[in-house]
Image 1 (cartoon, rainbow, N blue to C red):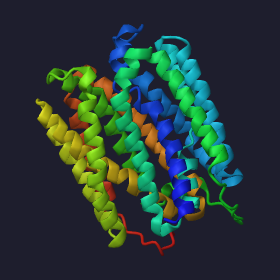
Image 2 (cartoon, one colour):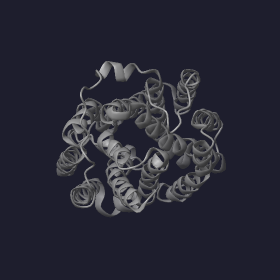
Image 3 (spheres, rainbow, N blue to C red):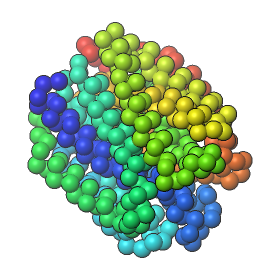
Image 4 (cartoon, rainbow, N blue to C red):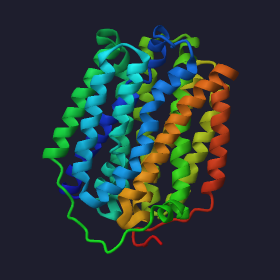
Length: 387
């Protein structure tokens, strides 16, 4: 990447990563905190409160993605970050499950993922786009790892209300970065826009949408269970970061050769399918994971596949979509949000009805279905034009 591409990518990755803390920072502590709230004894309601951020996003990704194609990326991103800040302040106002859910719902209404990803694609050349998306995906991984390190100490120090106030401050920083540091891409004049249905049903895009649904459903469901498995294995909550942080950081470096190989050899399909198989292997290991060593091994394997797919899939969406990046990425991020909500809600329900390990069994079934659907997909070179 040239200096302009790198600077813009890093700034947008920072915005994306700061906002993802709105989801990740609560994962290690929310289910335990919620036990002391009215209705917190019901795992399904806790899952719904955690997942509402994502289901609300599902209703706004497509409209805001399309709007970013029409009016530009920057206005949409600034509006979304404003809602994120307002929702954080509402969630901080009362230590009540209902108000937390309302605040997180408003945070989710600022659905800027499609606009940010399209902004990255607008400001980078196709031959470096997967690398740019890997940086954005890396920001998600770093946010996740950082949240796992700092969540418990911050929770002990300032409580859940204080965590939401911190998210409001981070949202304000993201707003200022987007406003002052990231250039607006040149406006493109288009004679017509493809119907949304046509974009949705394009086979390669559809397969990628299925993939991001399964990827995020299994992730959020997994983290309803993993903290409890670690506690059962003898690791105190305050020490969980000692597992999460090195796992996420090491997995990011382990996935880099896959990205380099896929781009250089034009084998993105092969790398994607390999990453899906890696996720399946992780789910199988989780079913037998009764020790800290086994849990750590499963987490490391899972996040190698997860990080690969977080880089590959949005890059491939932007290439197949061409001029309709905002709309296509809006659909992609909608299915991502639906996946996160579904994973949280069904994961909580399965835990309540069938026990912890049923979550991994369900995840394995979803991943096998994804592998079957993804198998016929084609590779796309940097010179290809999506049809």
